[in-house]
Image 1 (cartoon, rainbow, N blue to C red):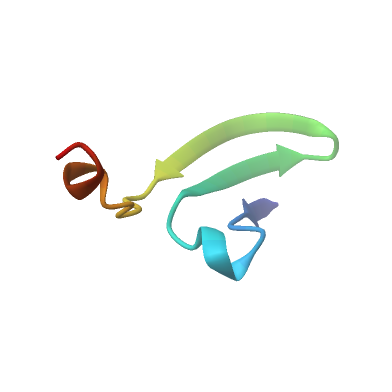
Image 2: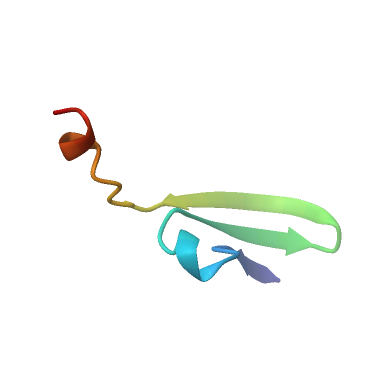
Length: 46
């Protein structure tokens, strides 16, 4: 079974998604998908 976890809240859209491939309770594969969240750090650092 392939299970898609995340994002958990609409405000965290694109931050982290984890794709799990399971065999019962055993995790066969885990693929983290790290997104890009623009926080304006360039402007904050000025």
